[in-house]
Image 1 (cartoon, one colour):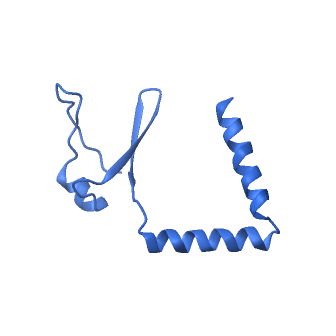
Image 2 (spheres, rainbow, N blue to C red):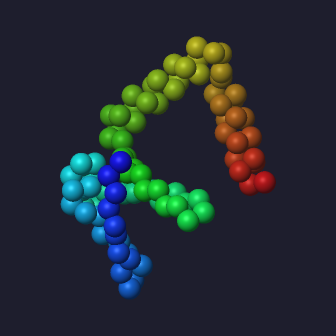
Length: 88
């Protein structure tokens, strides 16, 4: 694991060292997700898929759902149930 010390600016911002950006292929404008637990912060790169990648993922998900017998209504019910659980 590579450790770097970062400084928080007066406007609560940090800069990532160029060595980290190069190693992780992070470019200006890329998005990062920050996860926190206790006093730990974890940053993860968020790569938005291209429309072609999204279509391939969607096709794969549809094939998997069909292979186990799920219908479109089943998927809608699963989504609604999941959203209800998140609200609780």
